Image 1: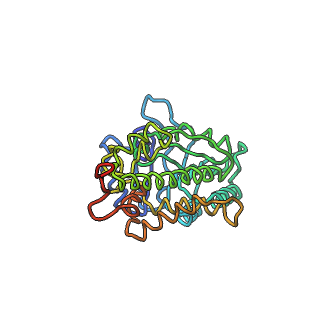
Image 2: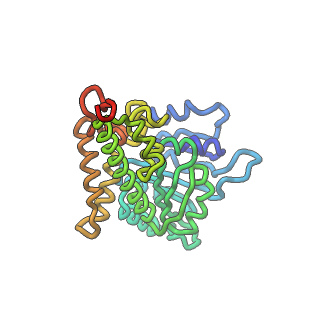
Image 3: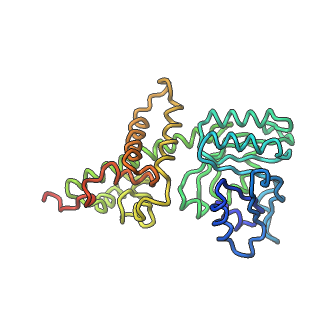
Amino acid sequence: MARRLVDAGVHLRVFDASPEAVGRFTDSLPSSAGHVHAATSLRDVLPPPPLQAKHGDPPVNSIPLVLITMLPSPAAVTSTIKALLPRTPPGALMVDMSTIPPDVSRSLASLVAATPGGQGGDGGGGVVLLDAPVSGGTAAAAAGTLTIMAGGPADAVAAVTPLLSQLGKPTHVGAAGAGQIVKAANNLVLGVSMAAVAEATALAAAAGVPPAVTAAVMGTSSGRCWATEVYHPAPGVVAGAPAGRGYTGGFRVELMRKDLGIALGMGGHGATPTPMATAAEGVYRSMCEKGGGGKDFSGVLEYVYKRGKGGLPTRAAGA
């Protein structure tokens, strides 16, 4: 995602808790990318230069400063926003692209709005925090085709849309926290459907039909979904899917469990029944318990449904 912004000519200051990660990113850039600064601390992130496009190109954003965060936990998001806020200049936009509970996003948005200089998107000159989680995986991030679910004031979302459009398709889905609500709903479907495809694939293979055959039929049938078409859990079925590289380099099952936990929290205390989310969370928990916690969530096929060391049976049907 950062590389997409670099290629758009945006002036960046990048920071990660892992200096090695920042080093790998900056080392991958061409020598002409002189508008990237590797920050050594959160304090070093501010103030960055104004955002601007390459010479001769129209600006991708007229906002003087946009702070984008993408972090793995609510605690990390909270501590980072609180650390940056006192030094964030008026007129800046904070865009949190992490996936965290909606109530945390709403609370942080209220905190930012209540801070001297902050505002709720009423056209003033203060700081605004948007929640803008994404969907699409690492391939979409590289291609700039992410789905971006933005929650917060409409005028602030409109202002940052040209910049976010370098990363994918931003959609304003409602007030603060709405982006997280839609993301949780989406990933509930994703988690349940992947587990269902893995279970169906294993069931058919155990009865003698190879995964590739089942996948081909599902691809033109009512079982068709993202998991069958783009991200199939069986190796060799979809080129480029994590299944073909040992379930590495994708969406870690630990993060899927976190997202399902957010959905379960939204339906807490029986307000909305969540039997599918509950069942899927149990399946992915089993994968973690069997040693697959660091793997892509499509590895549920191997870690939960795999039969024996030889992998999924592929004998002829009826044999």
